[in-house]
Image (cartoon, rainbow, N blue to C red; front, side):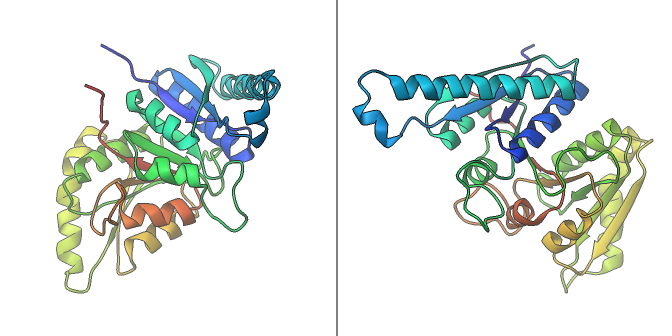
Length: 277
């Protein structure tokens, strides 16, 4: 059986380093290999006049050094992880999306090089997170070194809810953490009926993971606001890539997009892998 790796994007920034550490620990916990991907965009203005390959050689040397540093960071964070990596040339978002086609999970930092002040999420991370071929974690907020607090999951009655719950229970069990299940309440719904429906939805997962303590929160707040608030004390927030309120042109719900900009902990966006044929 083919083993699909966890892929992490590295660019030498502090958010990227946090993502590498998080990805390394996750790969070690799952027993999966880790692939470090650094993409350098060979579009410098000087390149068109570079007949001696001087600029390319400098860029390649820097990319090799950055990749080696990220691999070392991964090994320090998770000494048992099987990690490798190579620099790639091209458009960062496009190459990362292509590299993730064969991945079990893609992990990104919240910001990268060349980001504009005031933006809450880097453009590369946003493109990869909103059009992913597999599940994606964006390590943001307080960063990846979070070892306390619950795993928080947002649920609804969409077809992807079971996959989201399976992921959230697995993440909570693997971290020996409690699970907080959050459901937003719309005005026409009965709180008691919604709560009863959630408990029924959770029953098979509670049976499978009997050691995971579960708290159910039904709130009149919008789902995005409730989950962003819960992220202040969480170690991870888990949401589906699709759900109610999908924004046209993206593969991510509006709740997921808001969390990518406002959550105070890593955000796990669950998506059924799209494997190459």
